Length: 172
Image (cartoon, rainbow, N blue to C red; front, side, top):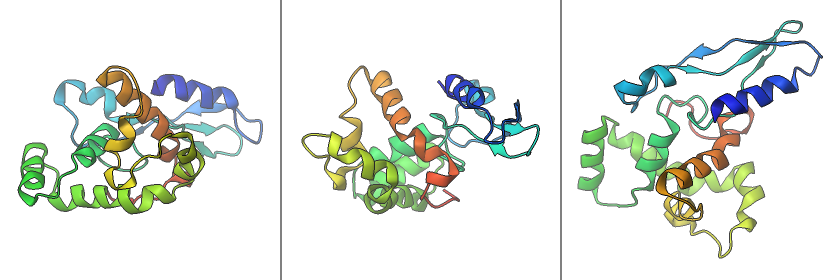
């Protein structure tokens, strides 16, 4: 899906009417299985041949500049339990620090509802989504198999993957 989104961005061209040339940049994603690491160790990006401005299209693989895959952030945040031992167990399995998982959960509870994406889309969900259960309560709204609903959810989040719309702590 990122390939299609990148082609749409490239076809849109630059604001100065220059041509966009591929300028993908390397990533070192965490929580990425070794067998697919090669598919995730770069991010689509383009630069203009005239003004040299960079255009980075939205992504379903990454959530902005975060070092963890978007899917990992969503899945680990959706495990809504306050039990410290459960968070510690999840941290041990995935090698994600407990405080990082807590930071992600806090972001869903306090910052995500303030994003322009959620402000524009929240009224479309009826009955209203339970904010205290984010992201799990929102994932449930996307129909299909588990894989299809997760892909739809990540596509819904894709506007958050470009810097001008993101409000999450950058180091996450």
